[in-house]
Image (cartoon, rainbow, N blue to C red):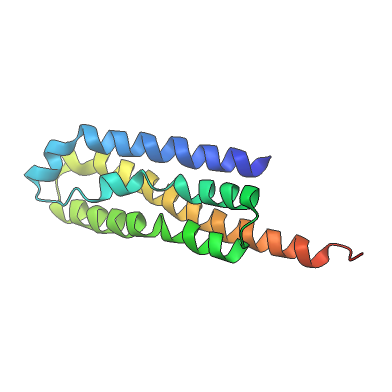
Length: 132
């Protein structure tokens, strides 16, 4: 049950931060920062979703973990690049962007940690399950 709540929190916060970044699109162009991070943030909730679907379909947990980590990873890297570019800008108008990028980074890192932890727990319970 807690896994669904964590996945829902990742989904809500990543969509909110991506929407906040989309609203300030003019600042991206003004400071000449790439906007590639914004659409990649929408991939963060797909990582936990891949794990849930893999469980329902009975797929190998490690393959699902690789896919669940691979989905948010480009977004996390793009968010770090955009965050560094806004930090270098030195303007106070970039503060809301940096806040939204920080939330997006936490969501992406949380999605990756969730995928690894959920897969580890699945294997732990599989190994500890009584045989017979």
